[in-house]
Image (cartoon, rainbow, N blue to C red; front, side, top):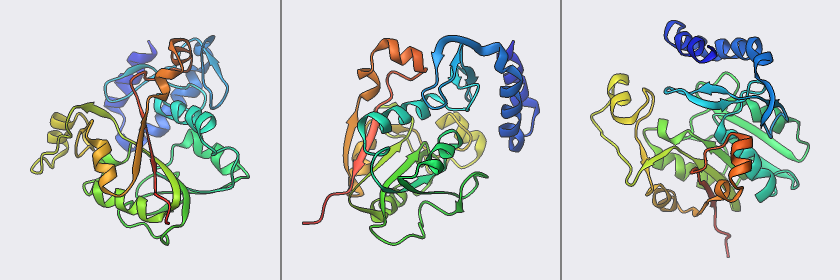
Length: 256
């Protein structure tokens, strides 16, 4: 029943109100999701199931309490278990902030955190990723999650991330990857055409496995980490993760 309400609501409610509508639906339906089958590692909630989410609704995708998605929960686990994000004093940039984790990041005393976006109402600064208003070699860490598929000049954005990272600094730049080779069609410009070719009205390409090469062209050293699969089936199901999602961990080389 919740899936039907959610799907119908997306069609009849103007897009600019989707975020608010999701919030109210989440609060209203929270008692229906009480259980022990799923756990959100970000807010610590336990649930019978997660909410559906996506243009094509994915079951068990969104945390009913904090709104985290599969990719957000994977990021949290990776940052906690594979990086110094929770222990070192870091200057951090997040592009297109994820509200479920931004609240946590702002409270972490070891982080000097700033978020940017051109449109997001929760971003701390309005700024274009292809023209970052920060000095060279400024950040220890950058998080860019499901952003570049929306950016026409993605190579310029990658170069800007490289520029503002300190030598030895690192970034996680995630995109949805659904094919072998990246698909770009220059004359596809309308929302309707983009949905047909790229699967979503605001996407400008579909990335392929050559995404790593594109990042490395910007100067970044890239490790494709299959961390999610290493968690094992039990934890993947418990946290509601996408088994096949790899982490694209990028580092700016040290200067010698």
